[in-house]
Length: 266
Ligand SMILES: NC(=O)c1ccc[n+]([C@@H]2O[C@H](COP(=O)([O-])OP(=O)(O)OC[C@H]3O[C@@H](n4cnc5c(N)ncnc54)[C@H](O)[C@@H]3O)[C@@H](O)[C@H]2O)c1
Image (cartoon, rainbow, N blue to C red; front, side, top):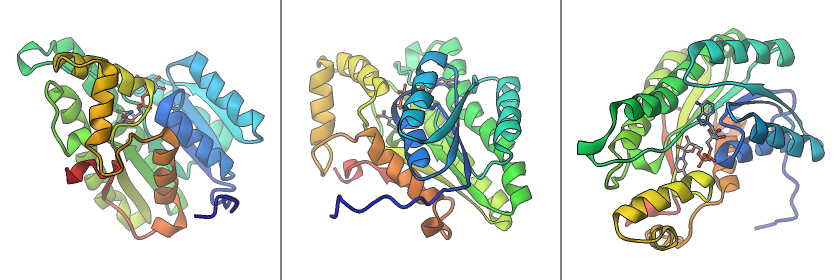
């Protein structure tokens, strides 16, 4: 591999909306698109961390702006997308990344927590797709990438609510790909394996605890379950998202791509 090769600016002139841009994978995705020349609209409900994402991008010469958005609320998303059009003039690419984790035994899932994770991970993604679609259609093309999870493709104990929402994201993706394909729009899902973010440390504490393991022991076990024997870094997920939004992936739609270091093989 040639590490000296410059990253091509594949997204110059494009406006990219990233939900969940404040931390973790979403922040890495915002960074990646900005590095490749895009103007990035960063939508998140964590204003402090979202400002930090935008400041980091600006410091390295990129173009990004932050908008407060709670993806659980249609009104909040509608206002944020309207502000993107006002400030960016167009939308070429949507990355619906905002998400939360919750896991309990099926006998113990509190319904209010189910409604919250469903509103964030599933309805939130549906609304983002719904709001981006008319702009992409008006331009005659574009890309949507929804962030699902390997939790939709494999099973863990005590995570029915998370798995259900992420399986739903794959379902939305396949169907929206059919709806928008005739308009030249590709719609794909990315299913990360365990990726080193605040969320995965939280999952490690919860799920590891259920199995009588420390968070570090659970993370080491998850790394060992992969073919590559390590967990992902957020930028490794961002690279695949950028590929899916690029011209190299123009004939790729309706897929849910496993970016899991070979976890599915074990
Ligand atoms: N980290 C992993 O191992 C992993 C694996 C598979 C999938 N994922 C998925 O990747 C995405 C990003 O996760 P992450 O690991 O970077 O976690 P993270 O907690 O670092 O990032 C989640 C982001 O979503 C934002 N967010 C949460 N609720 C929101 C709301 N209601 N409105 C707007 N923004 C909201 C948070 O503020 C945060 O910026 C999630 O959808 C997650 O389910 C993560």
